[in-house]
Amino acid sequence: MPLTNEHVRDALRTVKDPDLHKDLVTLNMVKDVRVDGEDVTIHIELTTPACPLKDKIRDDIVQAVRSKGEELTEPVGEITVEFSADVRSPNQRTKDNGNPLPDVKHVIAVGAGKGGVGKSTIAVALAVGLAKFGARTGLLDGDIYGPSLTTMLGLDDIQAKTRGNTLLPFEVHGIKAMTIGKLVPPDKPLIWRGPMAHGAFKQLATQTDWGELDYLIVDLPPGTGDVPLTLTQLLPLTGAVVVCTPQKVARDDARRAVKMFQQLGVEMLGIVENMSYFVGDDGKTYDIFGRGGAEMLAQEMGLPFLGAVPIHMELRANCDDGQPLKNWQVNEELAEELDRLCKNLASQISIATMSGKFVQPTLSIR
Ligand code: ADP
Image 1 (cartoon, rainbow, N blue to C red):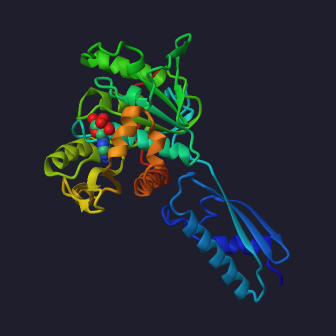
Image 2 (cartoon, protein in one colour):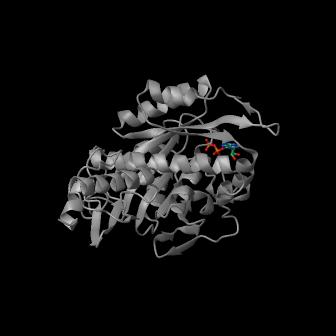
Image 3 (cartoon, protein in one colour):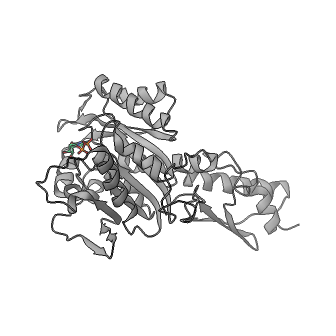
């Protein structure tokens, strides 16, 4: 009997998404199967365009369909696997239901135990990197005490625009961004009492016209202050990422940041080790801060480790110049590390989505 559409679907029932541990048919990832003589074309819809497991899924599909052919003693010709992606939302809540951003599928907080560890640098890299893979991505500068996105995204010469009470995001480097740095004079000290900090953050988050987004990355202020609390009260968070440098003092602070998110009931999507190591002009690798420290912390706390970013002079220079996309052009190793970070985060987001563990906000906005 020649191979039929149903035979191919049967074969796909034996292929599991390696992250989500369910088969492709159950996960509703098989969008189309076409059998044309001996040739088979399969369309798979991934849960993120930044899927790190595309090649593995393709190989497993080819193997499963060939095995099916052998079982039926039918020849199988060319097997083509086409991919598309649709980021799934964990969030079924509508605006009437108290969600101020119902068109944003995932809100991801990026925090750190202390300042200067590269939290904003990593938040920018994650946002721009996910957009490079094709995801619709926004970046909110939630660091209302020390906003750095004006510089890091090169917004100095761009005028902020509003429509009525709505802030229009800056559309740069493939993402939509908003920062308080563009709404107040640059030399004005940003001193917020608790309720004011809450109000400022709420306004930035909910009055910006984000449109439809797959991912909204929120760069939080360092430490464990008011803003993370406001964020969890206000928006349905998919989870949080903590950025940490490898040395012990940084790890101790990062541990506190992780515990804060956990206490707020926020899923920890992973830890990033920034300034992990340095490769000199001599080609030698120097473990300035003790490479692997943050990875150890992740292991110790049972959290995913998303990746390690080296100290790189170009990374600093591109941040200062507001040219984040250049980080993918100057150095292959750096580009690979940044891509890995984005893919690992996207995969943890998909895993969290399927697990259905989400903290619901306690503050309703109508
Ligand atoms: P935070 O948000 O944690 O305060 P930033 O992201 O503002 O930290 O980074 C602080 C400084 O360190 C910035 O000048 C940034 O360009 C630089 N920096 C961050 N990560 C790296 C890195 N991996 N290599 C080189 N410079 C870095």
